[in-house]
Length: 607
Image (cartoon, rainbow, N blue to C red; front, side):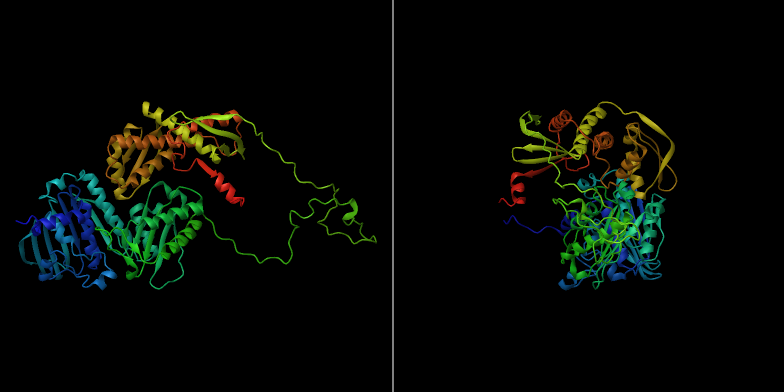
């Protein structure tokens, strides 16, 4: 008998569900997308047990008739595409016709829908099998209730996280679509408690800023700078906001393509590059980027969850980079100075004119008293000075013969480097067997102190300082839940966090070795982390200790333009190359730059 056979439909649906439905947040995403595609102006989401027990999404969209209400749960049944050409230019959030079928295969579903008030349908499905299909009176719109997610796939259900974690991920999904559609009202409640009520705002730049303020706070929204409009290119538009340097404390990065929230590495890489080029910094501000691209110019069918896209025009990324860089310039309070037309004559002589010449004292016109005859009076700005033979500066060379610096690596091998000296009190120069090495002394010392402090802090509990005036943290609903999850671990390290009304938390105490500003930045970074929990108490402790050590090391490290003696430089280099990671600081900046012999020869045209 043949060993190859067709799988039954219900098993195929359960396998497909693994690609589309990973957790309650995946269900919320698919249902909210359907509501928006249906033209809803109000989307209500109700959750129980973080969505593991119950998810209900209700909208006031166009609704469905009896036949469509049943067909919607068939695999690959959709009203949004009908041909390959339609797939080439998808303009809706959903299009594959997989979501409802896969959700129904692994849960208990009840759908009520109506195209006209009072003339609706009710469909109940359990594990992919229709149990009820009957008329049902309700207002225009659609309500889908999902109960007991993965009740028939226990292996999948046991991988779900704690209710608070699953609830936070659901909130993150809703917040993402609320930012994209400020004209739609979004309401989220959990077990009867309201968590989010984003009121509709105009679908303009002002409306987008207002919606950002509804979720992240008005003070944060006021720190955003609008991305300047680019030259019109048909249906293409690049708009949104970047934050000022103060917004770098929380990782709030949102990129949308035609209203779809995506994770696009190429776009984010251009954002990081723009910040580095414009700000010369590694502190990345908030980003809310809304891209409008002709549907045929973007491929949204490259990821099972439609979270990644591909652009058919590579030059779009260059235009995004240019727009971001102009916005970042504004965010730092900088504007391009107006160009001044060049003068007909130079204001001053070139710096090298007259070098190497021996002029007699009378070479310049002598000053004349007013009314005297003879040579004309020189311009008032010119004053005759004693002229001496001009020579180039006398060169000064550092001693060539110095002993080899006793640098050793982690394995104890000798490194044949020779100390050349210090450049402008900032860089330490080493001659190596294969080229010239430039060491940033501040970053090198920061790495050394960081490794010392990390070992010290891990060995003993840091003291606590209580704040006279608590620091108020205005957070998004999902960020607030994130910190509440972490409170037990934070308290062990000296952080005191108290919940206030709304989405505000109060920071009441911080570790004694950390400033209040650094503590706030650390908590905002933890709040913005969208991971599942903190990976356990050990992982949270590691992250906190690393942040503490990095902050302390940066403040205590040798500053730039600080002269060092030869023995001090040798000691610093010896400890650096004995470190666990001698090539980057705790923040990721490079410590060592190398110019190889080949590089130097090419620059001098010797090869």
